[in-house]
Length: 153
Image 1 (spheres, rainbow, N blue to C red):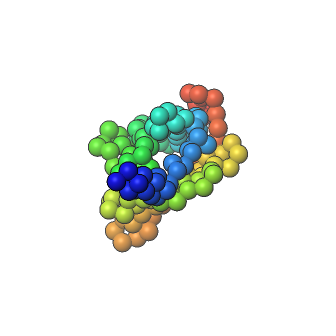
Image 2: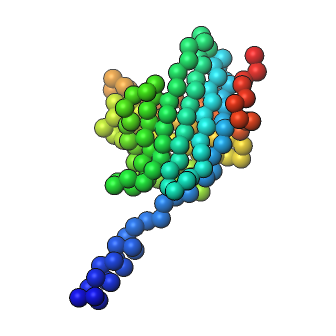
Image 3: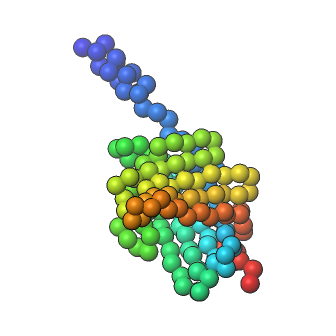
């Protein structure tokens, strides 16, 4: 019986893929385009938990926020988004690289996918989905910035 238990444990360990390192997302990021101010902050991974927050001030001065976190779940690494205090919506990691991550939830109304990619001191974020039968997306290009710095006015 011990040999069978060892074989089952070994098979389980082999089938469990390593958790991708999302340390490249950590930092304070700022997008000052189109008259808006968007800051996105990500922690480093601590015991498998990455925590993020977004503060947006639209061109008209209207504020909004989003809390988010990434943690291993039953379906794999999962991004939970909570825009403006809404209940968390899960997006499961479906693709990743050394500086790229793609999360998906095709059952969500919008977005269906959340994509992040880092190039040097630039973090690109994109959400994609379908609204009323039309493919839609939104993009942000964040630059690394000092913590809590603001866009020039």
